[in-house]
Length: 480
Ligand code: DUC
Ligand code: ZN
Ligand code: ZN
Ligand code: ZN
View 1 (cartoon, rainbow, N blue to C red):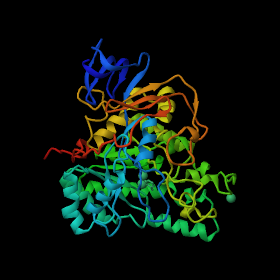
View 2 (cartoon, rainbow, N blue to C red):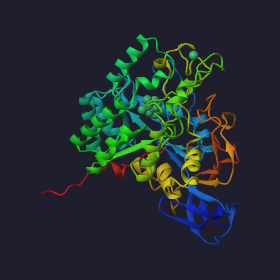
View 3 (tube, rainbow, N blue to C red):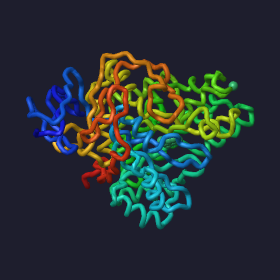
């Protein structure tokens, strides 16, 4: 046989095109696209189904140690298993530097954590929390050249945040080396001040999380991040954008011709702040609203619409899960300090690796808000480009990795945590209806998930060194 596997009669969708073809796969790569391809050792008939590039999730947290005693529930096995079952074939979690730690040591630690656990391919973003002169002049440039070509910096959280001067220093290294910088944009002092006042007034329940981080704290930090990047003349990506005020800042920057990219996440389309206010004590007396605590917090229905508008108009380049999984019913999870934990002691993050694609396909593509090529761009192609993995990932093209998803559309499914494959004991999307789900997921030509079952193998996933991302190139301006 010419091919290891042939997927017959696929309705292939890329960020640019829709075409009908057989897909011939050899040695884990797409070897041929055409009509009536020769036989494969194995064959899958995809007649009547869309075949898309596997999802690339450019923002998730796997086995990341937390400084507050909480524990990320998913490691590289359960996290990649869950991703595969949700149609994602590449994940980019973070290797997080702790203050006082060398960046190199952090990277080595995360490679040990990944070990041979991953079932799909992965790369790492760095988190730079301690930009010492040694980090800025030696470690960061060296790591960028070794394939860690993107990193996140924080404007809030005491253990991670950088001040403006430090942000300028890090942005400057990114410009010199050609790396992509992701920014968590919330004003730390505003949050601390609001939090203190809420707690002093006895306002401790999960719903006050949203009141402690109103949109203006995100707007202010987004504005400042844009100004700092403009000063250094370097592209940036604002992550997890939640609503109108940050979107307005980003649109303003984009209209100036600045390369300011933006990411949003399912929680800003499918949850609202009201979900933090659910005050049932059904499960062991704990506040159900804690399940939806993430930062920035979900907003309201009008802001959900703003996020949809931004997805449609191109304000957002990428759609990621920000999977930050903490168990609910577990002292290491959402209630590390007990069930009376105040809102500011509840870990910020929700699971979403496995539900990201189905939610957006249903509410985006099937509802007519997004065309299917835009869906592929937002969830796969643009992500691969943003972080230097394209065209190996994010495309259906000859020579690309055979990371593919055969979709089931026309179904009716209710999201239930019991059907998911992560290590978390809840999903914030419990009970939501979807009309599509990834049926078969292939990672480099191997079926890793099919019809709701995980079929992958631990250790199949490989570490991906990343190229310098094309979108990280500074603007070229004509000289006067
Ligand atoms: N930011 C993230 O990117 N993930 C989880 C929590 C946070 O604040
Ligand atoms: Zn963040
Ligand atoms: Zn209560
Ligand atoms: Zn995150």
